[in-house]
Structure formats: structure tokens, C-alpha cells
Length: 392
Image (cartoon, rainbow, N blue to C red):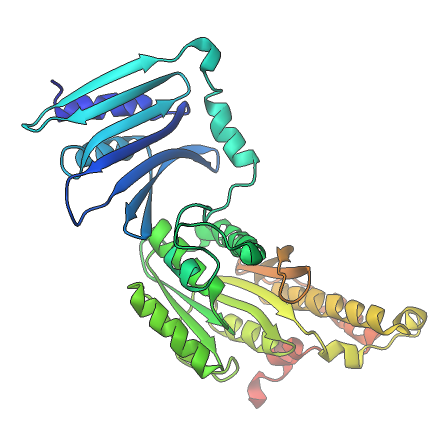
């Protein structure tokens, strides 16, 4: 018979780059989890382990390093689960909890011809497209929003939405270092609509990564916000709130760490960006749409032959709008990148403006003004940040 410390040491010997998975099964508590799977993954080149705990139709995630994972799994054996089945590239194992205490364990080496590639599995797992929210694992809000079935299968007609949600979570993952995991971060999502991405953001940050967050979804559609609020309460998402409100007039928060604005139409994006700057928000994620303002202003003798074509003028104006927005954010102390974002609802590809506050403004005033004068344009964000604040 083995003691729990020996079980912990045996598990620890498997928790390396060769591990495929550890599955805990044989539910011991009627109200407890039905199954738990532990798998390795690479994050920033560091090997970590993710536990997926299945409770009814819900799945809860926990990410750990090697020592914590060994302690976590060994602590569940004999308490919540009867057995652990372990699969690695070079060997397999089984650990059984005895009825009167103690454990038995068996480890078998795999024949050379059936061995998998160890770390290559983890690397390949990262090279191939691996979604943050995985197909086959039920996620409550995706089921209620019609993206998943109760078994975790993606509804065929909503696969583009599933891809979009995961692409958005990749952007959230990239800005995690900007959020303080030791205190509550406040995030405002302007124009959240049906809130697929708002729910995904909360689920990822709070449920999967354990960040203390308070997320406020804001939209003008009262019936939609009422439904989203009801869903948030249904899932027990205490840190997620939905309110009816306008971007320009919202005054419900004094300090905001991150502002998300997806598809705020035309100049509504500018008001959201100005609001984020006034809060000194550390992160801004914005996907603009319907950039009409500059289309009505833009004039250029040099470009006149090109702007004669309506669709070309529209696209040039939209690109100039977002490029100037990026430059104006740089001018007030943000480091900005413009990235491609999948979105099937508006256009096949959209641009995402990602701005990280760095404190030191870019000295680009002359260049920005020269472009504005050459194109005979004055974006709303320029007036809001540099010319209109005192008048509001």
C-alpha cells in the first residue's frame, strides 16, 4: 500500500513534458465533480498544467505549475475520486484508492514502437490551432447563446462565432500582464450588444485564469441587457453586470483599468476612446466600424482620381480614420498596434486597435496635423482630446 506522500511523488514524476493526461474518475461525493482531466500546456515557453473539473453541465478550469498540480491531484484521490488513470509518452499508470485508506499504484513502460514524441506533443498542441475555449467541453454561456450544444459540440452555423470568440480571447491573453492579479480590475465593455465576447472575457479572466475582475457591459438596448443580466445571475457571475446606457454620457465608474469597444458605430468609437483616456485606462481594445465621418470630409487634389470611386473612397477614409485614431492615442501616452480581427457579422476581416498606456506621449503633433490638413479632415477624437474637452 502507498501513503498519500508516495502518491504525490509518483504523480510528480509524471508531471513533465511527456505527460498526455491524468484522468480522475469514480465519483465519491454525490454532489462533487464527476470527472477531472489534467493536461500539460505551454504558456510563454513555460510548462504548466490545466485541470478541467466536470460538474454537471459545467466545466471549471485551474492552471498550475508542477508542484501545485501534484498536491492538487493527490489531495482529490480517496476524497472525491476513486482512481487516477495516467498516460504519458513513455509510460502509463493507475492509482487506486483503497476502501480503508491507503493507495495502490501500478506503472508500465510503453514499448518503443508505440511511444509518442513527448514534448513534441505539447509543442504540436501549440503549433496547431488550439482554441482557448475548446470544442467538446460544454461552456454554459455558449450553450445558452446558441453556439454550443449541451454536449459541447459547436453548432455548425455558429462556428464562425466560435472562432471569433477565441480570437478575441487571444487578444485578452496578450494583455494579461497589464492587469494586476492581486486586486480587482474594472473593465467596461461599451456597446456590448448580445455580449458573446463580454461573457467570454469574464469566463476566461475569472473562471479560467482566476483574475479578480468586475466587468460592466453597456448598451442602449434595454431588452438585450435584461437578458444578459439574467444570464449572468444564472451562472453566478457576481462580477459581471449589464446596464442600459450611452457611451458618451456614462459616468458609472471613477477608475477603469480596461475599456473594450467593439463595433461602436462611427464617432461612438471616438467617444469611447476619449472616455478611456479620461479614465487613464491601462488597456484599450477597440474594433471600430461604420467609419463615415471622414468619408464626408476627405478631399485631396492629389488623390482625387482615386477618391472618385465611392467604394475606394469609403475604404481609404475608414483606414485613415483608424490610423489617425492610433496616432492620437500615441500622442496621449499609449503604445498602439493595429491588428486583424475575425468578424463575420460586419466584414470578413476587421481591424482591432490595441492601446497600452505607457505614460510617455509620442511627439507626433506636427505629423498628425499635416495629414489632417492634407486630407482636409478633423476627426472627432482630435476634437475630444485636444479641442473640445473644455466645451463639453
